[in-house]
Picture 1 (tube, helix red, strand yellow):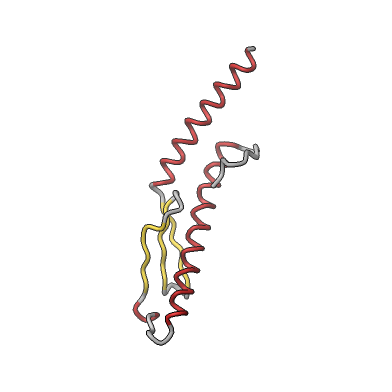
Picture 2: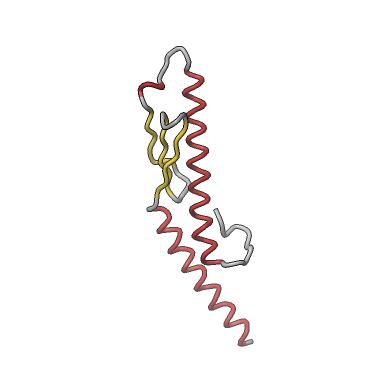
Length: 104
């Protein structure tokens, strides 16, 4: 029975540590760009886009599709980098354990 108690304490500590990391990640941001910096996206550790900046040089009323593609590319890169940031922090906590759902 002592083994189960120890395991439960470890699980509770890991859960507390995970909550702390998730709160920290919400306050961290990453930047991603597309089109050589023409579109810049800021994302946080909750995989939320917090800001998009579009340089006026890339705004062409005759080529809206290009701008749309750049925005999508920047957002996808921002979300990928955000997930990577969170996964890196979570892997510090979980070590070599491969626990589904504990990484972003």
